[in-house]
Length: 136
Image (cartoon, rainbow, N blue to C red):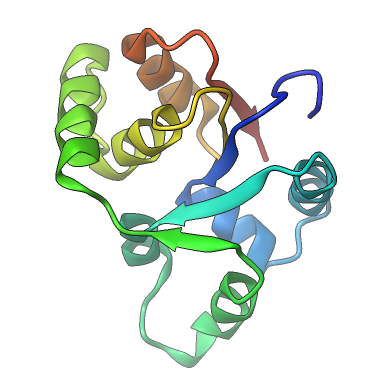
């Protein structure tokens, strides 16, 4: 991952959180690389709504979230940016747009995702040349 990002954060989408909670090998390796590179790992709060059901089956998600440096609330400016990105990219998933808008707050960030196609469309719409996307 170091060849993609030299500074910034790793922002996780719902698919990445689910893969990490399920202890997916590739996702865990990518996360380890990010941590070894000194990158902060964050989860936007709307991602929690996608992965959390309030059932006992959430235990692996809760365990994983205890290891994450930061669960970040969505600010009004990030929400507005997400709306703009969603409209420009023609993507309907609001949470994916929030994930990319949150990544754009810190240049050099990367999105760890299970949906690289939509995330890349949103990154392209952002016009931010220093955002990356890696699929789990």
